[in-house]
Length: 135
Image 1 (cartoon, rainbow, N blue to C red):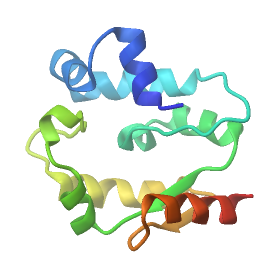
Image 2: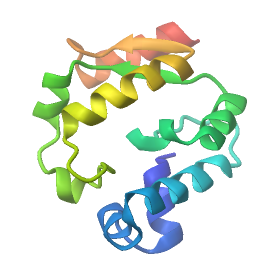
Image 3: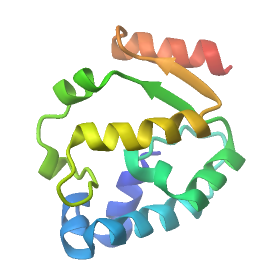
Image 4: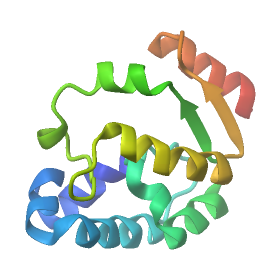
């Protein structure tokens, strides 16, 4: 389940549209509420990167299972993210990816039950590593 898609379906708007309309803090509130209300069993949940800012969401996700942090160096994240504005990355005014990375990485580490370094892995190798580590 991609929780960003759940948000988009619930509100009938793309993430960047919600961020433009609600502001970053308004979007974070929406993201926190939606993720905190997920009712799932035996599911893999892919969240947006800013979910880690919502304590209620993280508490709920922890209650549903293990939190896996896919760790990547900032340079690889910058390479993978092609269009920040339409991607729907919730950043504060004047922030860039480096600012977001520095702020969120400690939170990802704090909440993670398992950390997988995805730096040198293909998609398939990353899935294999997660499966090997979590199960």
